[in-house]
Image 1 (cartoon, rainbow, N blue to C red):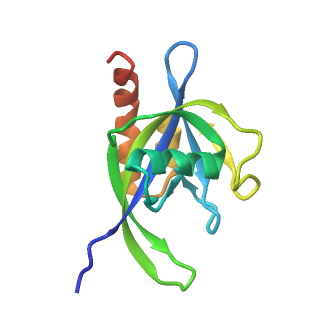
Image 2: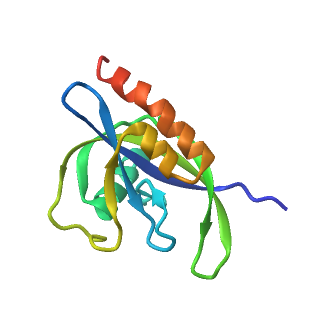
Length: 146
């Protein structure tokens, strides 16, 4: 029997550089050290975009303006401590990064790096996340005009 995928919420952290181009921050996962975006399970009492923003703060110390509407979604298999793999559907919210805290809960557990959007799309493993990042470039620059 096929169970529907578990829902997670993620942020695509970005900032505008001088000249108007954007950069995207990726972080490494704690287990496999592959490049990912901050994400996590829904939080009781928090709206989806607020849960996503909270993950970005806990995992990368990022603080900024989170969009309330997802810019895309992707699927991946979340490996649990038991070794079981749970199919997950991840809703991705844009996060315009304003600052980074000096300390945050998972500091030192992950690597963080700003990427050009094309490099960020290449760095992640999930094909659907690559697409979200590729599309994000036009969405994020267009959203500034709104």
